Amino acid sequence: MKIRTRYAPSPTGRMHVGNLRTALYAYLIARHGGGDFILRIEDTDRERYVEEAEEIIYRTMEEAGLHWDEGPDKDGGVGPYIQSKRQEAGIYMDYAKKLIDKGEAYYCFCDKHRLEGLKRTVAGKEISVYDKHCLSLSPEEVQANLDAGKPFVIRQNNPTEGTTTFSDVIYGDITVDNAELDDMILIKSDGYPTYNFANVVDDHLMGITHVVRGNEYLSSSPKYNRLYEAFGWEVPVYVHCPLITNEEHQKLSKRSGHSSFEDLREQGYLAETIVNFVALLGWSPEDNREIMSLSELVESFDYTHINKAPAVFDMTKLSWMNGEYIRAMDAEAFYRMAEPYLKEVISGNLDLRRIAGMVQSRIETVFDIRGHIDFFEAVPEYDITLYQHKKMKTTPESSLTLLKEILPVLEAFEDYTNDALYELLKNYASEHGYKNGQVLWPIRTALSGKPMTPGGATELLEILGKEESLSRIRAAIGKLEKELGD
Image 1 (cartoon, rainbow, N blue to C red):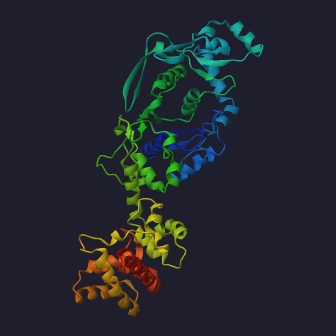
Image 2 (cartoon, one colour):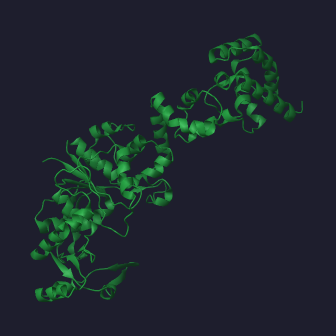
Image 3 (tube, rainbow, N blue to C red):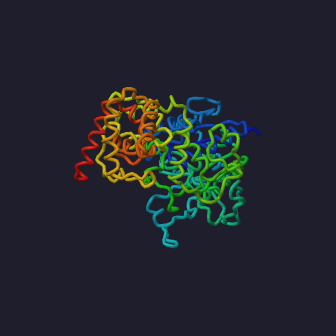
């Protein structure tokens, strides 16, 4: 049997990383098994529907590289692939009525007042369990209510005795008492299907063989199974994924600021990194690799190895992984990505490609670029203790002496290229009894005012050019003289 998986998001906002993981795992199962991956938009919850969210779904899927075989724009013969359009075609009401005819569902005409009276508090929580009141209505009473236009819902008729067992790839066999199964609503009073009912009907009609979703749906699965059995349909393979938590082991919420794909993209993380990272939230390959392309994930993914334990969303690891992806980028591709951030900071006519090459190996997100290159625009305020370096045996006093000595040498020198400057300063150090670092460290500090820079002293001299470099060294001499009292 050909594998068919689906991702069925509701357009209610940005795509949470948990939903992205669901989409990714469904995609990987299909691709690894040579099957089909379907995109279906579940927009029947009109109260939570956000118009622009549908576009967010398409854009996120495209950026993540999760290309679908069938969907709203790719008819595979089992459409429509948008639930509201399936609703217009009367699909859900037709199937609900089939269940009524089988005695597996029934019309419920209870008003809000009566339903409120069924609520009770259990273990501090308010719950409502329907008492099957309308199941006892005769066919004549039901028809009279329908003819009178009385509002109704259609409920699933679940047994109250015995047990229901379902099997999940990750959690194994799970058995629940049927007494715990409420008669859930299948068709709401507005005529729209509930999420649970539409899911089962659509999955069957679209030939879905593997259903991937979060483990918060485990408690609903017995009701799904009851529907499959009531229709006489084959139950799909269930793959319930573990909870995703933050570093404090609490459920990852929107308030975290990094719970969605778009949040992370806006914070400078690459789409490829996010996909790689999310794939490892609850699963790992047998060889424990951590850096994997989408094609490598397809090749290695085995859904039977998904863990039960909650997966921790570790921002430190995500940042590390993003840095690895940045360092592996082609230089030209990195420059195209970095250029807007370079130009945001640097207004002068400097070699931006050279600067990009210097920072590529030092950053974890593109936003880190600013802090690494701001000194190219202007030397920040800094403390002269920066000239202190134990290993180099430099002090502010020795640095002042060195800068005064080297200034006329650099003034007289014309070839401001990295190699020529390095030879000049290396020879100067050798001839005057200095170690190389005792010459280069004060110059680099004078040019940057930073404890760390992307590149050494001679690279900075070349990029800044002779005039700007000398101006900064003179300013550094003045600063040291003033603060040291010389």
